[in-house]
Structure formats: structure tokens, C-alpha cells
Figure 1 (cartoon, rainbow, N blue to C red):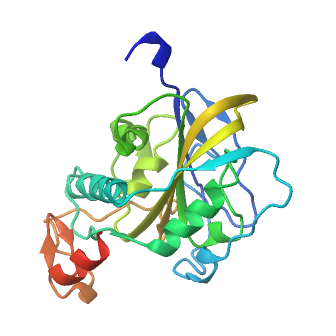
Figure 2 (figure 1 turned 120 degrees about the horizontal axis):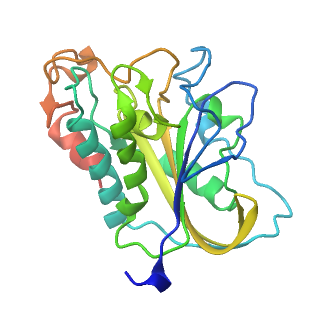
Figure 3 (figure 1 turned 135 degrees about the vertical axis):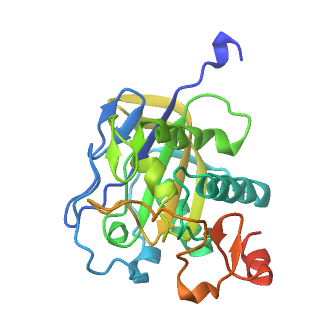
Length: 254
């Protein structure tokens, strides 16, 4: 890619802290609202009700253009997550197979449509995880926007140590009990990022349920793949992950 197409790519992840809104802060190529795993209560962790309750912001002046996410991109995003989850080191004994969730995707799109470089909405953040990525350059595939999250694995030491500024994009991707994801992509104009206005950007928002990154906890249990799967999976294992039956997986994976 020539100099004219130099890509600026940044990522952000949610640190789920009740009663505290996420605040944007530049840190080299990474934005995070904290530098260690979140400090939060487990109360209501699996509650889903507010995940789909999103509030629009009236009078938003930013120019926005929707870029519909295609079924091909959905497959690419989902397959990328599951490939990462199936290859964790050390191996995971309870890694659940991740499925696409249209409700999470809709909530991600509602938030992305505001073209705000920050996490939200605050109420929904109590019940779901969220990773963000943004680029001002071209990209070959939607998965290019996820690569910086995966690269954080080099700074993560199992069970919960991070040697860099942030590892929580990666740990959210491989949180064993996070079995649903929904993402949205938006083209934004005149978006305020890191203290300046970016004329044209692509914003990716991925929402996760149940949320991960609980302080002091490992993202998964180590051991022989699928040896500690929740009983709800009935012993089904596919590509090193606790998996629903083939028919269900086909229906929900696009």
C-alpha cells in the first residue's frame, strides 16, 4: 500500500465499571478507559434486558453514512473470533463456541451510528462487553480491524497478567463464557478522535454477551479442550470448543 494510503488504526475496549462512563484516552495506538482488568461487581452479569435498550442522541451534528454489514463480513468476523478462541495457549477446557447475535449487532449499530469514539450506551454497558476499532485508511478485509485486538496476546500471560498498556481486547475475545457477539460497521465523517477531527473514518463496534474481563479472573480454564464444558452442551465439542449441535450452529452462524 502506497504512502497515500497509510492506515491509522486504533482500538478500544470496554472496562465494565458500574456507575462510571467510559472516557476516551489516547495511548499510542490503543484507547482504553483503564490499564488493568476491570473492577466490577458480578451482580446482574448475565442479565440481557438492557443490552437491547439503546438511547439515541438528539441533535447530533456529525455527518454519518451507514455501511451495511454483509453476511460475508458477518461470517468473517465470527469465524475470526472462533479461530482465535480455538487456538488459545495454554489450551482451554471450557471455551464455548461463539455465535452471532442479531440483538447485539443491532445495539452495536445503534451506537456506531452516533459516530462517537467512546463506549456506550452507559446503561447497556452493565450487561455486555464492547470492543471498538477505527481506521482512517483502506483495509482489505473486515478482519483487518480486529487484528490489533488479537495482537494483544503477545502481552498477555495466563491467567491474568498483562505486560503492556492493555490486553482486554484480546481477553474479551477469548473469554470462555462469552458465547455471543454482534458487530456493526459505519462510515463516519468529521469524527472527533484523540483531540482532533478525522474527516473520513471506518468505525467497527463489537458487542459481547455475557461480558468478560472480570478482575482477578482468568478468561478460561486450562486443560484438555472441551473437558470442562457446561452441561448444557451435552458433551458436544467442535474445533476445541464447547459447541451446540450442528443444526443449531448452522442456523445461527450465517
